[in-house]
Length: 469
Image (cartoon, rainbow, N blue to C red; front, top):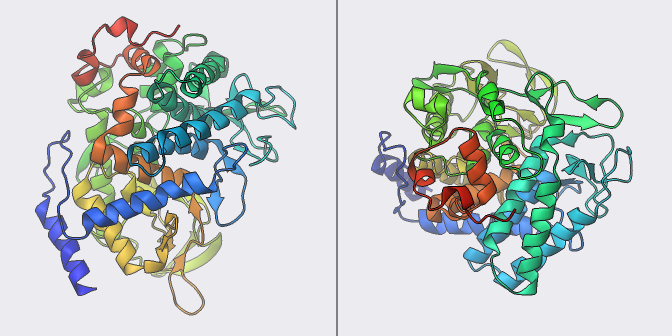
């Protein structure tokens, strides 16, 4: 154990904090490469082994039996590409699974009915039955979860470029699904996209405004060849940004780290800027790096005096928790939460002592010098967190079990496994980033949002990239 902790400290010393924001470093410390490869393969297996064999749907969580999350299924499609590139599965195996999944989505009933349907207007319900694909209970038709599903679908559309019948069918089906989404229908009179819709009540009041995980959603909506949203939607969205300094880092703030990660799983924002970031002199990649550093600094400072927090043990994001209960800690009354969007920023603080590995795992490309040591430290400190399918979702060492042990989530959660796997792959090989740099819809969406610079300006024939219209 001492040797392992010395390795963690050595890793932290090798990589100083002041890395150039667009630099991706290679970690070369004893055990770290083997650990990362083991982590990646285990996490891939969550998506490969647990997906439904007929529908391809990925469970929201496991081993607890659950419905499917369509966002997790989108992450699972990108995971299949990672598995092929890493030789965990063959290209033929991956292509067959992808085609099965896409055809299942294509054939689901699209209707305004409340039951026995998978979606409406090209969107899909947030949670669906693993076997039938039908709406789970009364959940909403989700714009962001459909967006994350479509990001995985567009990844497969671009990656499977072969001329055999299976890969041709993947492209045809993926294009059909993407073109069918009526993004403009979800836009509201105030100029913002609604977060969702239900057949019982119509559009929900919550809107996508200000900085959060919805960048890739708006980019795909801007790039649509059939139902695009207006150019001004991007500028409207940025009006809600909070540019503040938190824990010594000045950036667009958003408390839970998943908001700084999800869009970056698919789009390489290094060196490209919209109007807002041009005026600030950074890009969204650097913004996410600063958010990651600020959260580590907050947890190291540990103002609420939770057990275990340090510069190595940190990570606040959406995750499971011990359960909704009142508690007294450090002389203060507080609530310990169940599943919740934990985070810390200038305008947001939800912290009950619960830490999630995906916070560090999904930020590896931004700040590998702090994220990789944290993942190793989490595994070494609480070995029970590391399972057959990678990290269990969360740990709370302050509010634990009756016998004084830390609370460790029994489950892995799909939308938290996805960032660990895909961002680790992007950090090592830039795989998903490079695939979607070739996607005409992502390119068009970025250009319509006003992005320019770096790889986006270097594209040949920018107006006709892989034009499939």
